[in-house]
Image (tube, rainbow, N blue to C red; front, side, top):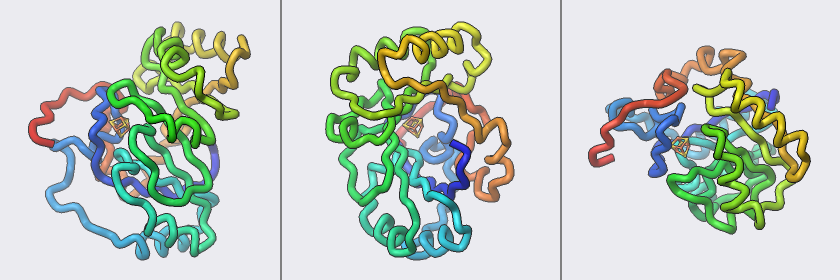
Length: 211
Ligand code: SF4
Protein backbone atom coordinates (compact mmCIF):
# COMPACT_ATOMS: atom_id res chain seq x y z
CA UNK A 1 0.00 0.00 0.00
CA UNK A 2 1.29 3.44 -0.93
CA UNK A 3 4.08 2.39 -3.31
CA UNK A 4 4.33 3.65 -6.87
CA UNK A 5 3.06 0.83 -9.04
CA UNK A 6 2.71 0.24 -12.77
CA UNK A 7 -0.56 -1.68 -13.20
CA UNK A 8 -1.01 -4.14 -16.02
CA UNK A 9 -4.71 -4.97 -16.27
CA UNK A 10 -5.37 -8.01 -18.41
CA UNK A 11 -8.75 -8.60 -20.00
CA UNK A 12 -11.14 -11.38 -19.06
CA UNK A 13 -12.51 -12.81 -15.82
CA UNK A 14 -14.90 -15.74 -15.41
CA UNK A 15 -15.54 -15.04 -11.70
CA UNK A 16 -18.09 -12.20 -12.15
CA UNK A 17 -18.28 -10.77 -8.63
CA UNK A 18 -21.45 -8.63 -8.35
CA UNK A 19 -19.52 -5.64 -6.95
CA UNK A 20 -16.50 -5.87 -9.27
CA UNK A 21 -14.99 -2.41 -9.72
CA UNK A 22 -12.94 -3.37 -12.77
CA UNK A 23 -15.78 -5.02 -14.65
CA UNK A 24 -14.78 -3.09 -17.76
CA UNK A 25 -12.17 -5.79 -18.21
CA UNK A 26 -14.79 -8.50 -18.65
CA UNK A 27 -18.32 -7.05 -18.81
CA UNK A 28 -19.70 -7.19 -22.39
CA UNK A 29 -21.33 -3.75 -22.03
CA UNK A 30 -18.03 -2.12 -21.20
CA UNK A 31 -15.32 -3.90 -23.14
CA UNK A 32 -14.19 -1.66 -26.00
CA UNK A 33 -15.05 -3.03 -29.44
CA UNK A 34 -11.44 -3.05 -30.38
CA UNK A 35 -8.95 -3.85 -27.64
CA UNK A 36 -5.46 -2.80 -28.57
CA UNK A 37 -3.04 -5.68 -28.16
CA UNK A 38 0.38 -4.97 -26.66
CA UNK A 39 3.19 -7.53 -26.69
CA UNK A 40 4.78 -8.64 -23.39
CA UNK A 41 8.09 -7.08 -24.47
CA UNK A 42 6.47 -3.73 -25.27
CA UNK A 43 4.55 -3.78 -21.97
CA UNK A 44 7.78 -4.42 -20.09
CA UNK A 45 9.46 -1.52 -21.91
CA UNK A 46 6.54 0.78 -21.02
CA UNK A 47 6.73 -0.29 -17.38
CA UNK A 48 10.50 0.17 -17.18
CA UNK A 49 10.25 3.71 -18.60
CA UNK A 50 8.02 4.72 -15.68
CA UNK A 51 10.53 3.43 -13.10
CA UNK A 52 7.89 2.15 -10.63
CA UNK A 53 8.80 0.43 -7.37
CA UNK A 54 6.65 -2.51 -8.37
CA UNK A 55 4.69 -3.79 -11.35
CA UNK A 56 1.28 -5.25 -10.45
CA UNK A 57 -0.26 -7.73 -12.87
CA UNK A 58 -3.98 -7.78 -12.29
CA UNK A 59 -7.22 -7.75 -14.23
CA UNK A 60 -9.80 -9.01 -14.65
CA UNK A 61 -8.32 -12.27 -13.52
CA UNK A 62 -4.72 -12.41 -14.75
CA UNK A 63 -4.13 -16.07 -13.89
CA UNK A 64 -6.41 -17.24 -16.72
CA UNK A 65 -3.44 -16.33 -18.94
CA UNK A 66 0.02 -17.89 -19.16
CA UNK A 67 2.11 -15.09 -17.66
CA UNK A 68 5.50 -16.73 -18.25
CA UNK A 69 6.67 -14.53 -21.13
CA UNK A 70 5.38 -11.32 -19.55
CA UNK A 71 7.00 -11.98 -16.18
CA UNK A 72 10.28 -12.96 -17.88
CA UNK A 73 10.31 -9.71 -19.86
CA UNK A 74 9.60 -7.66 -16.71
CA UNK A 75 12.22 -9.43 -14.61
CA UNK A 76 14.84 -9.05 -17.36
CA UNK A 77 14.40 -5.31 -16.76
CA UNK A 78 14.93 -5.81 -13.01
CA UNK A 79 11.33 -4.94 -12.21
CA UNK A 80 9.64 -6.42 -9.12
CA UNK A 81 6.63 -8.38 -10.32
CA UNK A 82 3.53 -8.63 -8.15
CA UNK A 83 0.41 -10.60 -9.00
CA UNK A 84 -3.09 -9.96 -7.72
CA UNK A 85 -5.40 -12.91 -8.30
CA UNK A 86 -8.54 -14.56 -6.99
CA UNK A 87 -6.41 -17.70 -6.69
CA UNK A 88 -8.82 -19.96 -8.56
CA UNK A 89 -6.40 -20.89 -11.37
CA UNK A 90 -2.85 -22.36 -11.45
CA UNK A 91 -0.17 -19.65 -11.55
CA UNK A 92 1.99 -19.66 -14.69
CA UNK A 93 4.89 -17.23 -14.42
CA UNK A 94 7.54 -16.05 -11.95
CA UNK A 95 6.45 -13.59 -9.30
CA UNK A 96 8.16 -11.69 -6.48
CA UNK A 97 4.90 -11.31 -4.59
CA UNK A 98 1.48 -12.92 -4.83
CA UNK A 99 -1.70 -11.44 -3.39
CA UNK A 100 -4.68 -13.78 -3.31
CA UNK A 101 -8.07 -12.19 -2.89
CA UNK A 102 -10.49 -15.12 -2.62
CA UNK A 103 -13.96 -14.87 -4.13
CA UNK A 104 -16.88 -17.09 -3.16
CA UNK A 105 -18.11 -17.26 -6.78
CA UNK A 106 -15.00 -19.26 -7.77
CA UNK A 107 -13.09 -20.50 -4.78
CA UNK A 108 -9.30 -20.49 -4.55
CA UNK A 109 -7.23 -23.62 -5.11
CA UNK A 110 -4.89 -24.90 -2.42
CA UNK A 111 -1.69 -24.22 -4.45
CA UNK A 112 -2.56 -20.54 -4.64
CA UNK A 113 -3.47 -20.21 -0.95
CA UNK A 114 -0.17 -21.69 0.22
CA UNK A 115 1.80 -19.69 -2.40
CA UNK A 116 0.22 -16.38 -1.33
CA UNK A 117 2.51 -13.84 0.31
CA UNK A 118 -0.62 -12.12 1.52
CA UNK A 119 -4.35 -12.62 1.42
CA UNK A 120 -6.91 -9.89 0.89
CA UNK A 121 -10.45 -10.52 2.00
CA UNK A 122 -13.08 -8.17 0.64
CA UNK A 123 -15.50 -7.68 3.53
CA UNK A 124 -18.85 -7.28 1.79
CA UNK A 125 -21.03 -8.51 4.67
CA UNK A 126 -20.92 -9.13 8.39
CA UNK A 127 -20.44 -12.85 7.65
CA UNK A 128 -17.57 -12.54 5.18
CA UNK A 129 -14.66 -12.97 7.59
CA UNK A 130 -16.20 -15.95 9.42
CA UNK A 131 -17.00 -17.47 6.02
CA UNK A 132 -13.38 -17.36 4.87
CA UNK A 133 -12.04 -18.53 8.23
CA UNK A 134 -14.25 -21.59 7.92
CA UNK A 135 -13.43 -22.15 4.23
CA UNK A 136 -9.65 -21.86 4.41
CA UNK A 137 -8.51 -20.68 7.83
CA UNK A 138 -6.95 -24.10 8.46
CA UNK A 139 -4.59 -23.80 5.46
CA UNK A 140 -3.75 -20.12 5.13
CA UNK A 141 -0.19 -19.40 6.18
CA UNK A 142 0.44 -15.81 5.02
CA UNK A 143 1.89 -13.29 7.45
CA UNK A 144 -0.67 -10.70 6.38
CA UNK A 145 -4.37 -11.09 5.83
CA UNK A 146 -5.86 -7.79 4.77
CA UNK A 147 -9.49 -7.02 5.54
CA UNK A 148 -10.77 -4.48 3.02
CA UNK A 149 -14.30 -3.11 3.30
CA UNK A 150 -16.03 -3.60 -0.06
CA UNK A 151 -16.10 -0.11 -1.56
CA UNK A 152 -19.87 0.45 -1.36
CA UNK A 153 -19.60 -0.50 2.36
CA UNK A 154 -16.61 1.69 3.10
CA UNK A 155 -18.59 3.92 5.48
CA UNK A 156 -20.70 1.14 6.99
CA UNK A 157 -19.91 1.41 10.69
CA UNK A 158 -20.92 -2.21 11.40
CA UNK A 159 -18.45 -3.47 8.77
CA UNK A 160 -15.67 -1.17 9.99
CA UNK A 161 -16.25 -2.16 13.61
CA UNK A 162 -16.18 -5.84 12.66
CA UNK A 163 -12.81 -5.37 10.95
CA UNK A 164 -11.54 -3.40 13.95
CA UNK A 165 -12.60 -6.15 16.33
CA UNK A 166 -11.11 -8.96 14.25
CA UNK A 167 -7.75 -7.18 14.01
CA UNK A 168 -7.67 -6.55 17.77
CA UNK A 169 -8.62 -10.14 18.63
CA UNK A 170 -5.32 -11.25 17.09
CA UNK A 171 -6.37 -14.83 16.30
CA UNK A 172 -5.11 -14.41 12.74
CA UNK A 173 -2.55 -11.96 11.26
CA UNK A 174 -5.29 -9.58 10.17
CA UNK A 175 -4.61 -6.05 9.01
CA UNK A 176 -7.23 -3.38 8.47
CA UNK A 177 -7.13 -2.33 4.84
CA UNK A 178 -8.75 0.21 2.56
CA UNK A 179 -8.72 0.92 -1.15
CA UNK A 180 -6.43 3.87 -0.66
CA UNK A 181 -5.90 4.53 -4.38
CA UNK A 182 -9.57 5.51 -4.60
CA UNK A 183 -9.19 8.08 -1.83
CA UNK A 184 -6.25 9.54 -3.72
CA UNK A 185 -8.15 9.51 -7.02
CA UNK A 186 -5.30 7.65 -8.71
CA UNK A 187 -7.59 6.05 -11.28
CA UNK A 188 -8.88 9.40 -12.55
CA UNK A 189 -5.33 10.43 -13.35
CA UNK A 190 -4.70 7.20 -15.26
CA UNK A 191 -4.94 7.82 -18.99
CA UNK A 192 -6.04 4.21 -19.55
CA UNK A 193 -8.51 4.14 -16.66
CA UNK A 194 -11.69 4.60 -18.68
CA UNK A 195 -10.96 1.35 -20.50
CA UNK A 196 -11.56 -0.86 -17.52
CA UNK A 197 -13.41 1.09 -14.83
CA UNK A 198 -17.19 0.90 -14.82
CA UNK A 199 -17.22 3.94 -12.57
CA UNK A 200 -19.56 2.30 -10.10
CA UNK A 201 -17.13 0.94 -7.56
CA UNK A 202 -19.98 -1.17 -6.34
CA UNK A 203 -22.86 -3.31 -7.46
CA UNK A 204 -23.35 -3.31 -11.21
CA UNK A 205 -26.41 -4.79 -12.89
CA UNK A 206 -25.41 -7.02 -15.74
CA UNK A 207 -26.77 -9.43 -18.29
CA UNK A 208 -23.77 -11.61 -19.00
CA UNK A 209 -25.08 -13.25 -22.13
CA UNK A 210 -22.32 -15.16 -23.88
CA UNK A 211 -19.39 -13.41 -22.22
S1 SF4 B 1 -12.32 -11.76 -9.50
FE1 SF4 B 1 -11.68 -9.60 -9.51
S2 SF4 B 1 -11.84 -8.97 -11.70
FE2 SF4 B 1 -13.00 -10.89 -11.47
S3 SF4 B 1 -15.11 -10.21 -11.14
FE3 SF4 B 1 -14.17 -10.53 -9.10
S4 SF4 B 1 -13.36 -8.51 -8.49
FE4 SF4 B 1 -13.77 -8.44 -10.71
